[in-house]
Image 1 (spheres, rainbow, N blue to C red):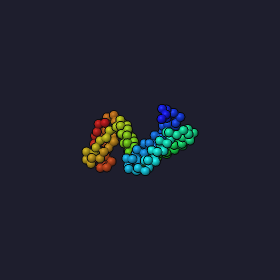
Image 2 (image 1 turned 60 degrees about the vertical axis):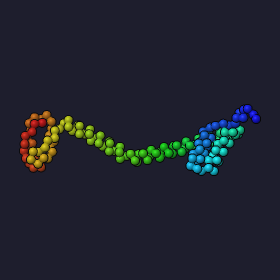
Image 3 (image 1 turned 180 degrees about the vertical axis):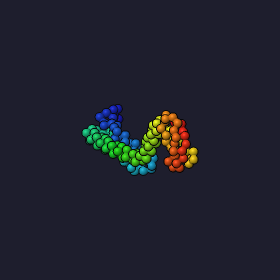
Image 4 (image 1 turned 90 degrees about the vertical axis):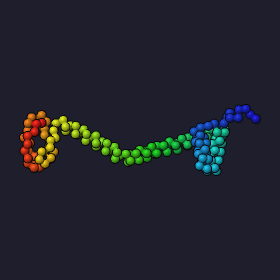
Length: 144
């Protein structure tokens, strides 16, 4: 028997790895005929002496995988956008609401009418004001 049996052979590449891993997965799911075909073709590729054909197969495999990754990434982006749109929209609106409230609190003071409990907005730093409630027409004094 020859010592350097693997010399001059194509060897292991990504397509051969895929075929061998796929055959192992097929064995785990008990699809033995398909596993034998995948493993046999993977070993055939590793031991082949026809470099040009194996390289063409490898390029076809890489093109297919690249196209598949590109399409799946676009699909996953669309799915994630549809699923998370409501979440991001709610977070954004609550953040904007907090910003508006902070700006509002800086310039105005909110007080309640002592009679009808209606909330009224008064400008800050204007001293003592006589306030008339728009709902019940009650007048009261309030310091801002």
